[in-house]
Image (cartoon, rainbow, N blue to C red; front, side, top):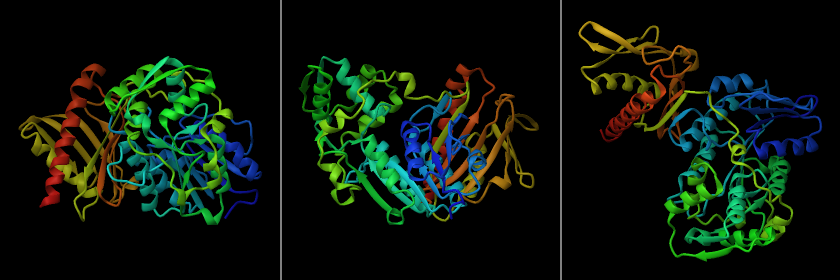
Length: 465
């Protein structure tokens, strides 16, 4: 049900270039709407109908506090390829899983009429997908697991001035008088222009025929990346020499693309790895088949060809000396997050025996990791279970203290079941170490990664037993 004035619309990822462009379109369609725009920092709005709210999507509690009392329509325009902490230990795919799972958990309690997700094109031959494409697919599966009324849009390269992939293309063409083009430049793709994306998102909003549908967005006829670069160079007035070579060489491609465009590796590497797949929109799933008859040149004439400095690609800057560490663990059949947490507390002292000991107060949910021999123990890490924030599929423990923990620490550890109960994500968020930063990175951080790999091996052995 909408409120008396109009629908309540939630936009996650509102500070991104698509989110910012979408909000005015939504207000055109729903003049009486109330829009809640979520971003990492609070912002001022020049329109009383738009309220910006600061929110950490990695924190389910922060997200719940930022949500309005009711939501009719929600947009999810989030990705996590940028930095999330001073030290990130984990893949962006696992980060995306946590973000999507938090959003779905918080939103489903409000019973929205529709959730719209903008993801990436998935090749028809879905086997052996790159991590980038597989991550986009896992976000879709996460929303489906929580049974949200979902509308999915899949898009390839989006032509927009602030679009990261389009910026990479522009910089390659503008900065190289001669370009050696590996095999991936012969891969077919169907780019789409930003106005078409915004039109699709807006037209489908609160329209019942689009709920529980998946659409591919194609802005023009299919063409290769090489053809895209040649046409872009022509419209920029550049006489670039293109030389093709008959091999893929993803490693070299990632390196020179990052260097030439001055784009962070965290963004370039996953995108280049995806280019070995044909990224062509499926004809039977097109949102607007008429768009697919246009030419790429037509789209370019209406697009801004201005390049942006690197600093604007990732606007977020994490707090100094914070750590996020996420590991994907296998979940034995019939088990849950609580079982994995308890198993970890039993396994860890055995793995480090006889040095590390674990003391658990089951009544208070207090856990102490200590080092020592006999009766002499030195507390390294103290955790406190949050029963009100935990359930069998998500166990949350706050990091309360210990010799390895800085006084300003606000960290937490969680074990979260995801993806149709196939995996558990073991995640540490916002941890601040007591050790000097350089020493921490080469000692405690590396040890933690080693321990989690060993625990994953232990859980895989449980799958076979």
